Amino acid sequence: MSLPAVALFARAPVAGQVKTRLIPALGAQAACEVHRALVLDAWDAVQGLRPGCEIFLYSDQDHPEWRQLAGAGLRFQRGRDLGERMVHCFQEMAAAGHTPLLIVGSDTVGLSSHILSPWTRCLRDAAALLGPAEDGGYWAIGCRQPHPNMLEGVEWSSKRTLEATGEALARCGMPPAFLETLWDLDQPEDLDRLADMGGPVGRRLRTWMDQTARRNSRKRRA
Image (cartoon, rainbow, N blue to C red; front, top):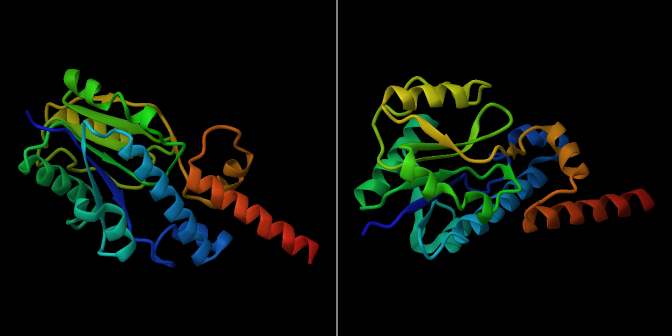
């Protein structure tokens, strides 16, 4: 029996190359800390799906921190844009004998194993799956088997990315089911929302928030 596979997509934690839209508000190093916290929280969430799933971390580049985190589960993204990289990931996991398949992004606040848990059940009834994000994109995409054109014509990082992906999947005979809608931490204004949140926040991101609050408090007293 084939084992389901989950891939976490995460850029390497290199200051100045990640969370660049947060750099004007935080600086490159702090923006990288936010990125790292989100990735580690997402990694905890996907790890919570074991032992029924194989887990991989698909990085944009080799990095010792990700190699230590994922070990033999570290893989590398291949392709000219996000669509090609995700299709390549699906094809690679399918070629290794896995089904169904899920790719999870690493920008989402409040992601948990509980939110992810219905994914295999959804893919029993649907050929594809999307986890919508509030900004018009999505934080997860899944399928039973990949189609080479499943993401053809999708404009990335737009308010229509989710809609366009659903249309592309439908053209391939893969109309999607949907997981819970979540929100991504990408823009400076998202930091205000994060500070006001009383709801679920991952352990690493909460630690970063607490440490930042303490540093700011010391600066005000100085």
